[in-house]
Image (cartoon, rainbow, N blue to C red):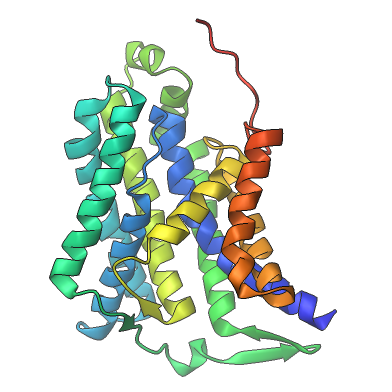
Amino acid sequence: MEQLAQQLINGLSLGSIYALIALGYTMVYGIIQLINFAHGEIYMVGAYVGYACMTFLGLGFFESLLIAMVACSVLGVVIERVAYKPLRNSTRIAALITAIGVSLLIQYTMMALVGADVRTYPALPDYLSASFNIGGVIISAQSILIIGTSVLLMVALQFIVHRTRLGKAMRAVSMDADAARLMGVNVDTTISFTFMLGSALAGAAGVLVGVYYNSINPLMGVLPGLKAFVAAVFGGIGIIPGALIGGFFIGTAETLVSGYLSSLFKDAVVFAILILVLIFRPAGLLGKNVREKV
């Protein structure tokens, strides 16, 4: 029982990171029906910005987290304006190929800038490195920090989407962009704002994962990006609560498989879940099947 509780705590920590990345996928898809496969690389850039702030500027965790979010939000807007906006009326396959190209461009640009070596994240202060033994279950301050930061960011996102003017514009554009434009909504600004929000969350996830695993590298965004995409599909891509549920589910499933079977199977189980979801419920857990008129 203690081992199960321990794995669930670890799963919540990892799942909260997947949820932050999945939110970017699901928001962008909900607005312009684009799978932004460069999103994992934005998360990688966030990890490196946080690393640079802590290592070279001597900043603390929270300051580095904020700067990484700002840097990634700017990067997300630039990518949207340069790579995706000219293809907005093109076929989906053209946008998808472009997203893969942008992903590779960011990866190899980062390799050229910092090298392909693995970097070790700076140690956190003692008060953020402590551990608590509660009934035989070890809960680290890092896990509390990661889960708490993720939940706070998710609550802030929900507030923005449901209580602010730009959030209402996002929901309007996701329902019908043409009707929203006729009602005076600036669709281009709204799409850029969506990329900005999703990229900021990905940047935060990059810093959290650096703290969690204590190492980063230029290719670190590939697999977590795919797993976050699986989480978004599992919950119902385009639906924000679905991304949260999917992230926590995938993270928990991965840690349970690692703890009770073998870490060799954790990735296979995640993608097996994707296959099962696509077979039995293609719209995801919270999604609805929508018929398209021909």
